[in-house]
Amino acid sequence: MDGIDFQDMKFFSILLLFVSSAVADMVKEVPAGQRGDLAGGQTVVKSTDVAGVPWPQLSLYRVVNAPPDLVADLFTDYDAAPAYTPNLLGAKVIATNPDGTKDVRYTVKVPILQKINYTVRNTYANSGQTRSVSWKLLQSPLAKQSDGSLRIEPYDGDRTLLCYTNLCVPVTNLVAGLKNQALVEAKNTVLALATEAERRANKPN
Image (cartoon, rainbow, N blue to C red):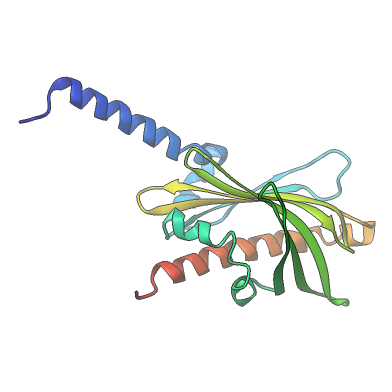
């Protein structure tokens, strides 16, 4: 081809291989037998038992039909979150810390108690093509600990691979009995994030 010699083609091949490898990093976390389900639009769930913790650590993967930049915007759009997140009544940044972390107070609807408030510290990071927000629980009436993250990477063109991970330690064994409900809530949260991102991606300019 005019203007492109063998060395150019070799360089572009190496570059393409590097980019493809970087994009696929998070996909490798998904069990090989479930990657077809992931590509087909299903949410793939990994559940990992943790010693001394009554609830397992949950990791949920889903492909979102929206570009990573748009999905990343949801990380900090707290005002809009109650409009699309099930059982979320409010989300408010109560402190922005010198290191860039943010303390966010959430108000959620819960059975029996009607609603509760809990506060987390969110940390934002970029590593290669992976963007993430991770959180640590600061205060909650129902949990002693809740650590998790939301990570995104480019996937197959202009789409995004999302991974939502959380490990929660409830305050009492009574609450621990609701671990199946916790999985349902995690699935609903991931679906809500994906649906909102896709709605924004398809919104007319």
